[in-house]
Structures are given as structure tokens and as C-alpha cells.
Length: 101
Image 1 (cartoon, one colour):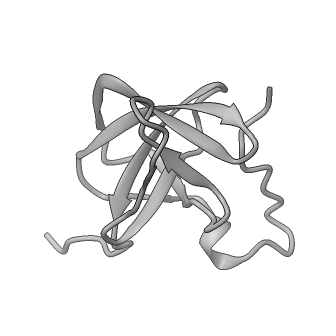
Image 2: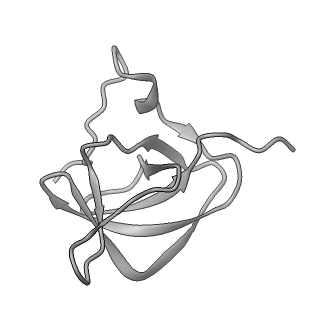
Image 3: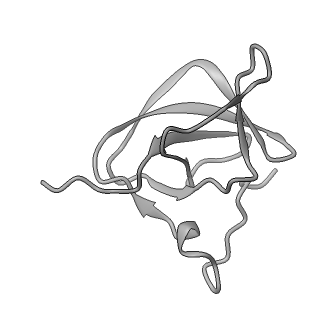
């Protein structure tokens, strides 16, 4: 499998340009189960490094609770790591704003 978001920098939407979060961030590990569904891996919480690259998860992708199959909604927007390999990735719920130091 390839990364669930096959981005092309040339002509891509700005939300698909990789960016860093700017500080350590709590993230959940998800498994790409296909058909634009990402299942949360229970008990798999990671600390994303400040320089990890993420892109905005498109609206047609769904983050799923593996216990009951319900869709988990983001408070802000889900972002997914770009430098991870299928089927596992890290996802954060982020407003896209970097904190100033």
C-alpha cells in the first residue's frame, strides 16, 4: 500500500502542502484500512516531534473507532503524518496554527 494521500506538489491544494506542527504534539496511531477509512489503534498514543511533517486530512477520509465502527469527528481538523508508511500513520486534531515562542 502507498500513503493514503498521494499528493502532487505541483498543482496541489495548499492544505496538501506538508508543514510542521512547530512543537511536540500528542497523536494517535491509525491504520489505513482502505476505502478512505483510518482505524484508531487503541492504546497507541505517540508524541509527534516538532519537525514532523503533516498534511490536512481531506473531508472524505474518516477516522474510525475500532470498537464500534463509529466515525470520530475532529474538534478542529485532522492532520496526518506524511513520513510514515502504510498501513500505520499518526493523526492529530489541530487548528493549523503554530504557537509563537
